Image (cartoon, rainbow, N blue to C red; front, side, top):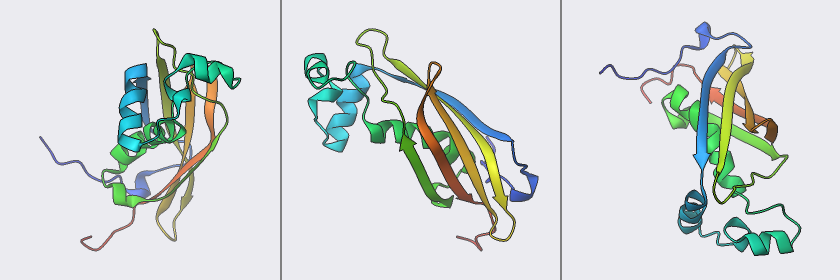
Length: 149
């Protein structure tokens, strides 16, 4: 198997789709993430609590959604150290149905190229069904020669 290589900055154009991936979430996923993160807020695993505070149901953790969203870009860049900035705006909660779960769909597209710094801004479209759940989701990836780093 050939070693993965970091994409070449010169080969990119604004509008290029660099990655697409879907992630299935279940209630089990949420419980495991709660254990790993220490975030045991019951809105992430109890319908009665979520509904009592006006939510439509159990919600995925925001940081879990954010982590899923950036992963295709990290995989594409090969080296996670090349991600120099990542920002999102949470626009809609991800409701995780007790039986059906939820599927987070991510499309990563080149939004801007800075030839001086060899940094590509990758714009993420993150949806569950037809609803966008992360707005202004942008990852800045440094693709220049790192001199052996």
